[in-house]
Length: 259
Image (tube, rainbow, N blue to C red; front, top):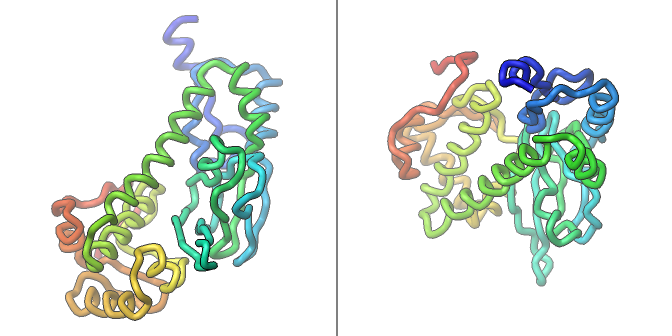
């Protein structure tokens, strides 16, 4: 098959009927010409969805690993329970991101995943995905690339938060959310914090009262504005300097301005 034919025959999951064009799976672009049966099998894998209400669990720690999940809409948090019964928030997950990847190695979910709001989930049975990947050239490599990217992002965040001041931690997580929204074509300056302040303080290892003082301090400095869960980063350059990331602006798709 020629290079030109390969280019012309690229099949993107985003273009398949009913597939999740806004989730991580849109990156699974296959540089091969798929037959109709292959397309149908792929579609069956990615179209299985589970609507979740706020507070509903997608899975719990200790559950047997059977699938990975892509968030189509809404948001989720993952958490563990310590030996003394305390909850530890391990991450927040937005549309287009995958959860459940950390269970692939052990075969059991090491943490629980719960919806922070109404969420639409794409369920991808892992056995079926592995089987299809063994038959479709290029799928396995792309799948591993996406998984590696998601896992690396989680570890990078944990490292970034280590040994930082309270102000630096809040700046880092706000910038992380800003960057993640920007990659999805949304505003990197204005967004909604779907997690509670207590969840956010838990994730950052801060007391709830410290979190309240930090939000007030950031507001008083003119770094951010907003009421309730609606947030506007009004001086993102100052936040980046606080986080040790320099004053560069986030990558934006141009769909939203800053003003």
